[in-house]
Image (cartoon, rainbow, N blue to C red; front, side):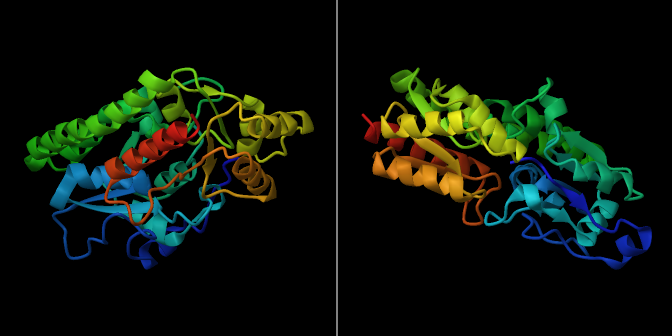
Length: 303
């Protein structure tokens, strides 16, 4: 699905009039808590990581947080703009995923330290997969950059921020262990996905895409896949040449629903993934681990 963001009403008067935290943010509004560092994250994925690193010293507003809403259709609001106007640190994804953040920062009148994850990871190229938070082995670099930004805003607690970043990095070990368990047993196994949401996980687990990559690209771009790509996808499910179907649970349409039905008929296990962190997830680590475990279970069932 192509990224379609809209920033609404960024005039200074509106910024001053709005209040509160972003919808479903991982932290509360910090009015009356002036000692806290005000942070705005483009999604609750990064918001949760910031909260783990900053602890009680940060107040986090996460703009994208509803797992029942297509993130690509999201419209940033004056409430979001107001949060950015108060911020000392902003965390966004980059590579076209959340370009609305650029406008929010530019029109905010503030001068926050901006941590752009794609820049931290050195992601370049014409068409990189923007779902960077699924590349779990790279997240310690992101955590370290967030700690640096928080330390700049709040030098007195710099040591705690960096210690929490290291703790976060260590806490990712179970996810890496589970991913490597898939790789050791299923390297080269073909799977299908409707979008590249979990593409980094697929690569890290040593799995292969068993349907035309152009199908997922068309979906991501908001275009209809070609009849040839659709037939190849359906055939891969019907003939069980792919061992799991990973689909974006936040973005569905008649075509993806039909593919899910084809998979169920062919007894190809379904693995739902999401772009934002579910509200019932304990934290980023628990969410990612549960999805890796779901993928492993699906591959086991397909044997």
